[in-house]
Length: 94
Image 1 (tube, rainbow, N blue to C red):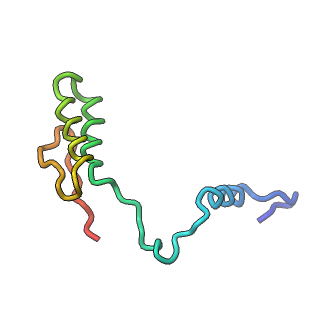
Image 2 (image 1 turned 90 degrees about the vertical axis):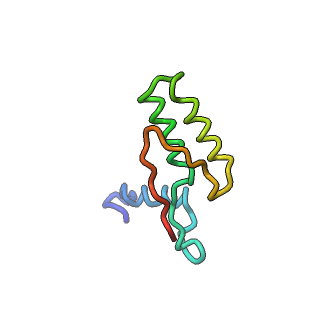
Image 3 (image 1 turned 30 degrees about the horizontal axis):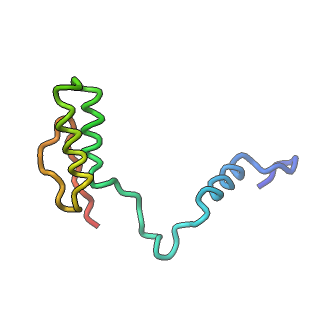
């Protein structure tokens, strides 16, 4: 929509920029897809919280090791060691 001067409105400009960066709407086979967290997101968050809440040398190395073990594991075979700073979120069942 244009204003009285013939320029597009700010909302129209934002919509055009949005379509420029995301040209494909979620239709057809992609319509049911929703963004989901990575299966190791809680391990990464545990490391980030450990950086800010604990001393580096004392508690961070085991958290980093568990994070990389999780990232390198197959789905369903993630490490079961307890988290230090984060309460894990249960996975969403589709």
